[in-house]
Image (cartoon, rainbow, N blue to C red; front, side, top):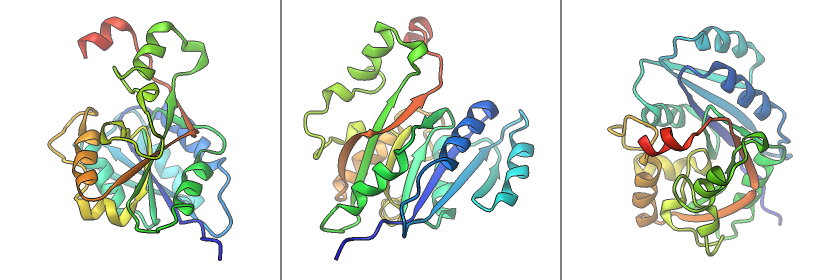
Length: 230
């Protein structure tokens, strides 16, 4: 008997990036949802002041969007809150500036469906790249060789180390995520909280696969000077 596709919850923390968020939500709504699965979008507004709350309020009536608001506490706290509110079997984490390409959702869910032992301990990392209009040797280097991501350093896509677990484009079973305890909320900025979680999760049995066909575009302008300062 063929295994069924799991249901999915896409969790997005957002803070003062309304235009980017609108693009991401639109791209999710255009995704193909496999038969027998289900899709919900959980957006956690982390104290935005740019009109995000008003726009999200106008989207709730569509029925496919859950909106949570909180005082600004950082992306780790926002993702944890979204995960607790989600109902899907699989959590998919995106950034509010990482736009999923066509087929992104299906690629993630297919990898979970094909995970034969069904232990509920599989994480799936997709590929996040910059827009073609932003292409440069600098961006290719930080994306592929480890300064920001490091996709060219992945030796075995079926046995990915914990330090490639990037919440710009990743999925894992919701029950396992909650059992491990979620992200540490004392990481107040979007840096390393995902890697720290994966270190704990891999010790607890998480296995990570890399599926570059599950693609997102990172709409975030990065320049050498500001990147080095960061």
